[in-house]
Amino acid sequence: MVNELANLAFLCAEPNKLISKTEPRLYLASIEPHLLQKQFVPLDPALWEIDAFPEFLSQRRALISAGINELLGVARPKGGA
Image (cartoon, rainbow, N blue to C red):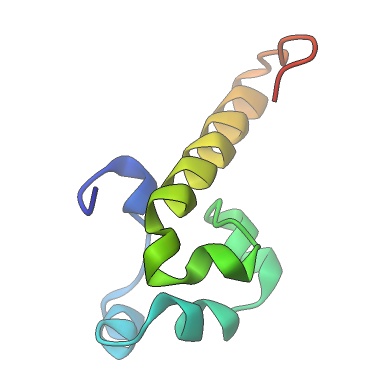
């Protein structure tokens, strides 16, 4: 799970070093929501807990997929998420 696409983020070296030993719930809360949205990070703080990691990945995969579909102009299926 650690190396899957939904767990990757584009981040410069310095900020990465600053957060490397910090829990996600702490460092994600310090980032402005619009910046998290640009990285397709789910905004629900409950998903930032370590024990919610599988659900976080699931939600982020859905956000990434929706973002790619929007970029490509792919229509959402009727009644689907």
